[in-house]
View: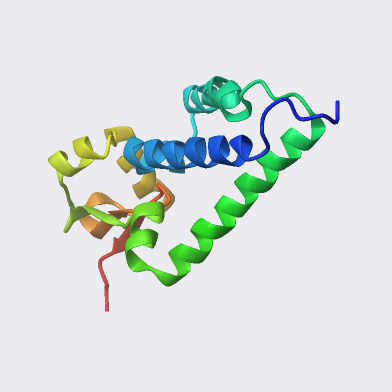
Length: 155
């Protein structure tokens, strides 16, 4: 239970490789994947976790091995946060940027397709903003996957 089955250095290396690979895959999967979890998305995340667990541990079942992996993942998360706060390029890669998806009462169909947004997604965002399509000045897909609507200024 307390004896490592693999060399200690192998566990942080495995954790770093899996962490970075998953970070890239999550960023590639798009903003809406991260921003709104449907039951399907939750299932994918759970299966992803199960799928990488053996690669992460390399068959290591000891308590110290689990603690080394956990410490490595926490350290990597802190390091990515630290780098994101100090580098615009890292922040852009990790967090993403907002995308203009509509303006002046018109949606941009190609942008919606590219970001895998459905008509029901954008209609829901209008309802949440208590805004009709003709009142919409701009609509953004935020970096966190939410849709923000700016209304026409009626002064």
